[in-house]
Length: 299
Image 1 (spheres, one colour):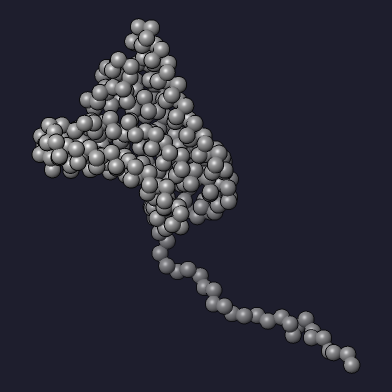
Image 2 (image 1 turned 90 degrees about the horizontal axis):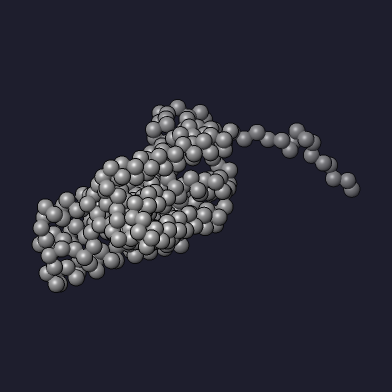
């Protein structure tokens, strides 16, 4: 016996699932920038992500702080009259750890949005491409400032506990914080602009490490050759071609640091102005390149 098939009208039903228009406040671009900044900064230390994502950034932060804790313990135990390492030198000595952190987190901040093509979704809201770049830039610089400024704070507190001269330690701490603040902006710009080139996180990691480590190794080698050939003036200008030596030169010229250049031949105050201008050009140029990149991606 044939079974009667239901008609098309009997199969079609309309359900009212309660969608309504949003009548609440529109928070606008500033709220979107703050949210993107907060999300990126938290993600740089694995907060709000899986437990596996927290391991590397937290481990690198611990590695950055460990030498400071050891120095403080030694200074307190031996009743030393000064810390074994200047505040302005700490980040330069541990630049390899900073490079690893930047290489692991800068691609994480921007590459996933490129890979999964979510950038146009951001720009479909009131946020503009300059807001996106500014939030990412500020978040990465803040993450680096936490990484580099935390150990300096440990050194400062330890120096006061060891009853070292308050005025000298405060001056050194403030000089060190200025140094790592500039370093954070410089390294964040370089890391993000490299990472924004490719949606592949692995390529971004390799590229950031290569740029930071190879440039420093090449510049240091050429500086050593120039110094051995009694061309001390060239040592200073060669330092302009690596992010780490740029920061070394700036700290030497204006923040009272001892230079790591061969023969301790750091730049003078006049030469330091050139270092400062180059650093500012790199920071501003990195922002401009990222803004241009995301203007095209968001179309």
